[in-house]
Length: 252
View (tube, one colour):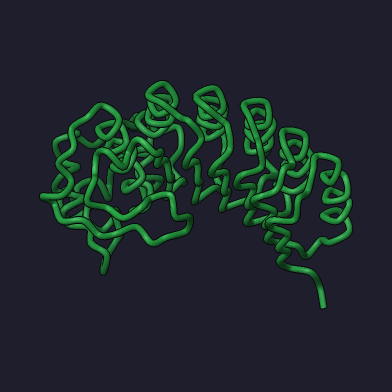
C-alpha cells in the first residue's frame, strides 16, 4: 500500500538525515503527513524538507528540531511558493525568535493553504507578535485559522491554568471573567485571535466589500459554533451588500 503518513519522532535524526528524508519524500508521491518532531534536523533539515515537501505534504511536524531564524527563512520562502499545499505546520519548541516569526509573517501574505500554524515556545516577543498581528490586521492573510503562540511567561497571566508546557494538551475553556489579563502581550494575542475568528468565519468572502468597523461586533455575535457562516451573519445586518459592486475597495 502507498505511504501516506510517516512518523519518525524522537529518533535522534541529525542534519545529515535531511537528504535521506528528501529522497524519501521524492519517491513517495502519496505521502501527505510527515512527523519528524523532537529530533535535531536543524536549519539544514528545515530547508531541505520544506523545499521538497511543502508542494506535497499537507501536515508537517518539525517541533523541537533546533531550528533557528535561518531555518525559518527557508520555511517562509517555501510557504510563499504557489505550489505549496501544506495546511498544518508544527514548529513549536524551536529557536525561531522574533526574526523567524517576522519571516513567517511575511510569508503569510502570499500563502493561501495554511490553516494551522504552531509557533509555541520559540522565544517570540512583542516584535514578532506585532508582525503576525499586522499581517492579519491588514487582511494580508484570510485563510489561516489557528495560530498557537504560547510562551512560558504566559503562565503568569493565567496562573490558574494547568502546565501549558505539556505538549498537545487540550486548551481549557475559560469563562469571560478568567480572560482579564490586560498585559501588552495578551492584548496583541487577543487581536490576533479576533482576526483568526474572522478568517474562520469566512473573511475571504468579503474581499471586495467595505463594511464599517462598528458593524463587526454585531456580525460576530450572530455567528455561532452551530452556524459559523460570516456571510450569513453579515447579510442579516446588511442585506444590501448582496447587490454591492465588486469594485468597492476592501476594508477588512
